[in-house]
Image (cartoon, rainbow, N blue to C red; front, side, top):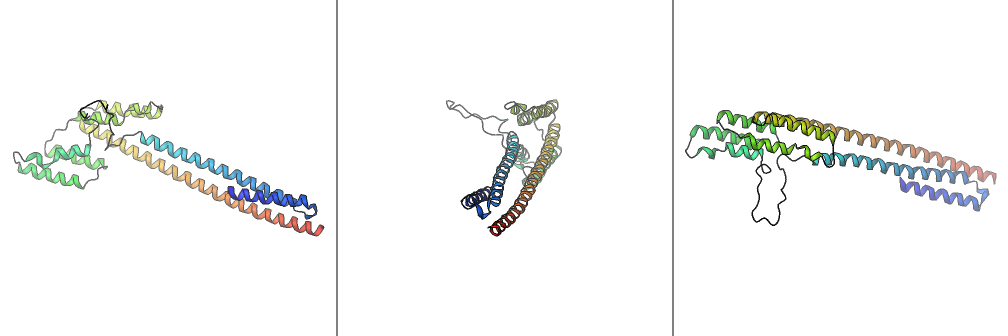
Length: 264
C-alpha cells in the first residue's frame, strides 16, 4: 500500500509538472487527485503498521505473563556460585509429580521381600501410568489415589506443598508489579497453606487452578483470533475502498484530460 501511494504521488507530481509546462493540457486536476490518493495510501500504510504493532504488543504481553508461570514439569535451573565445589540439589526445585509417582508405584519396591499381590497391583498401576500423558493431571491424580488405596502408600505432602508454593508464588508479580496477578497468586498460596498437610486437597487445588488457567488460555486465544479477523476485515475494507477511489480518480483524470484536449 505504501509503495502504491508513493507511485501515485510521483505520477501525480509528474502530471502536475506537465500541466505547468503545458497549461493547455488540462491535467492539473488529475495530478492533484493522484497526489491526494497517494498521500492517503501512505497514511493508511502507517496506520496499518501501527495496528499491527499494537496487536504484536498485546500478543507479547500475553506471552510474557505466561512465561512468568513455572512449568509444572520443569521448575528451572538454580544459579549456583562457581566457587562451590559440590553440586547443589534443591529437592523442591527438582520435584516432578510424574516421576515421584512412578518411583512410588514401581513394582521394584515390592521385590525384597517378594510380595506377589502387591507386585501385580503395582505393575497394573505402573502400566497405566506409562500410558498416561504427563500433562494430564487428573489422570495422574487418579492413579496416585488408587495406589494410596490399593498399596497403602503414604505420600509426604510437604515437598509437594513447597513445590506448589513456588509454582504459584506471588513474588513473580512484584517486579514488574501486577496487582491482579499478585492477588490471585496470593489467593492460591493461601488455599495451599490451609491444606498443606492433606495431599489430596493440594491436588484438588492444583487441578482446579490448571483448569482455570486452561480456560483463560482458551479465552485469550479466542480474543486473539477475533482481533486478527477484525484486523483482516478492516484491511480488506480499506483495500476495496482504495481500489474504488483509484478507479474514480482515474476516471476523473481521463475526463479532465479529454476536456482539456477538447478545450485546446
